[in-house]
Length: 440
Image (cartoon, rainbow, N blue to C red; front, top):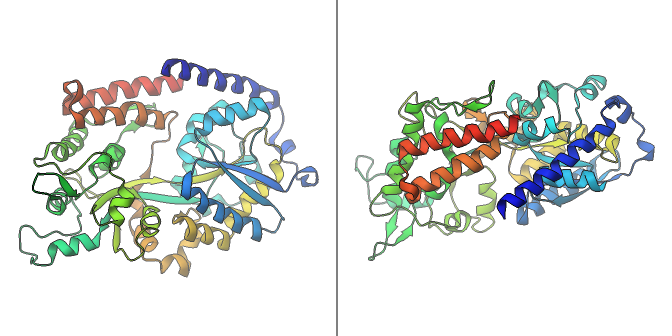
């Protein structure tokens, strides 16, 4: 069934790619001709942010709608599987005007002709793209062509429940071997995870020191903390140093094999953290907003992923969104106007930052009082130079989903007699095969 589904999705995308040929000979400047009079001012914007988080996005969109100088209103529609949905919408002639775009998808879908190239518009309108965080802008490029403008910066690190740390340390002194500090190294992270985990008389976990379920999504982040790479962007092949890849997987395995167990599979990290049953978890900046919606008084601290034992540096991965215009959108001029305004207007960006808990990609705002005086954002900016975006290669997300995540799951669950050495080999083998399919 899965194979049939994948074949169908590939067929839909292939049809849409063929359909892109109809306007390949049309100049971008002819499409974006400044003739807004024939376009609707009611724009539809798609995005992958679902559920209650979609309500926050809608709130941010409402601010943009109420405050832009063009009289343009935005209707946010959450969708899943943006690439396939755009392909189907192109065939049906029902494309959105804008997409709140996950930037790592650019390298995969831009070559397929799904998005308008914007560099000619940037040059025509004299727009200065140096105002954007360079790594975020780089994610929106393919073969030097620009396909979008970045909206936010979302570093992923580790959240620490300071109340649980303080409670644990209440009767201890810093010289006590059980004392827990906010971790800055792998060893300190492991020590804190062990010390902050609680068990009942039957050995069941009642409070979790570290959300080990999240390790599968943090493989690249931990590689960065020991100076490692994961993919050669020039060739689009897996490039994991054996020593460093092994070090990360062995560290993960220490958590998985600890006796007594350090975690329970399938916990809800938001609920557990808010309920003081989870002391640390890997997550994005907006995790704070999600937790404080359930426990407004909780004391929590964001830290970079702790430094590893080889070439150690505290680091992490940057996520975030950009704005793109699907090729064939019905209201391209109004979409471009609102894109430029939104990514440049201080009030609009700070409203988005406040509502969605993400750092603006427009770095000129980082000197504003709203950012400098924000305890979370100011601390992130101090360490942002050590963060990296995901490798900008076609199919990177598929590489994680098909090679990294299931292989680490096998290591955790000891499926197929999985060992650290076999896991590293499998990530490389499946990863190279996955990336090769994207290059074809």
